[in-house]
Amino acid sequence: MHQHLLVSDTRHFRVEDEINPYMDRARQPDPAAARAEHDALVAAHAAAGRTVEHLASAPGESDMVFTANAALVRGDRAVLGRPPAARAGEIAHVRAWLAARGVVAEDAPYAFSGQGDALALRDDLLLAATGQRTDPRMLGVLAERLDHEVVPLRTVSPEFYDLDLAVGVPDPDGLLAWCPEALDEPSRARVRGLRRRGFTLVEVDLAEARAFALNLVGDGRHVTMTRGAPRLAAALRAHGLTVTELATEQLARSGGGVRCTALTLDVPGTRTAVAA
Ligand code: ARG
Image (cartoon, rainbow, N blue to C red):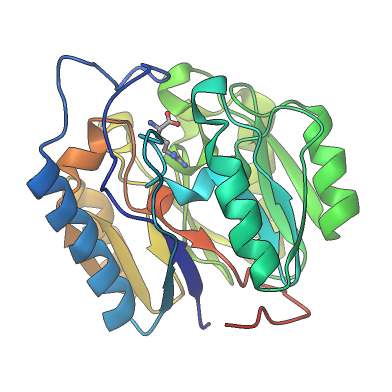
């Protein structure tokens, strides 16, 4: 499955407002190392055959490198993120970028963490989480505006402030990785129920989940992930995937990783391709 990703850059990346438990203003990312990490991620996406587009970060937007939170895109439609106040300024930049490419992006009427809390699978399936940064009322909005069949999930703690820390999608057509402890019991049952729909599930322990193991980009052939999770990497290789493990220590200082820095433009099941 060909993937088309929107990334930004680390030019203005800093730990400012501590809006997740991994952030500590006293532990700032090193600018040169952060840039090298991000460059290596982008190079890995390109090497995996993904199309990568770039939106320049804006001064003062210290979390803008995490493009995943800015929207959920499906074909030529999108619902914009509605992040914590500290990140609200990012949204106008992404709205303008999408509009220039013919994507009609609507504002979210309630709190919404964008793709951070909404992972698209094959067909119309969308794993969408509430509990931290996404208002439960958003699930109906996503179903209606983007024609998704929403599988509602709930993350249990601020350590999993976004679903993309609790569930990873190595292959949107059939392979999921997840940390059961990060979800409440009804959510666990729903994830297990995906087996009946032909999905294979790989379990990840809390230690690797906390090391951002699940914050990965996968397309069914290549998986790009952090180097901090050797058990998951080995499990994915055993499933026949080509795995690239990269440094994410600087991004981790802000509570982010591989998946957060890439907004997918052509989600699985897209009916209308996004013009490049
Ligand atoms: N510091 C950023 C925040 O708290 C990190 C966002 C990472 N994004 C993600 N999809 N997990 O908003």
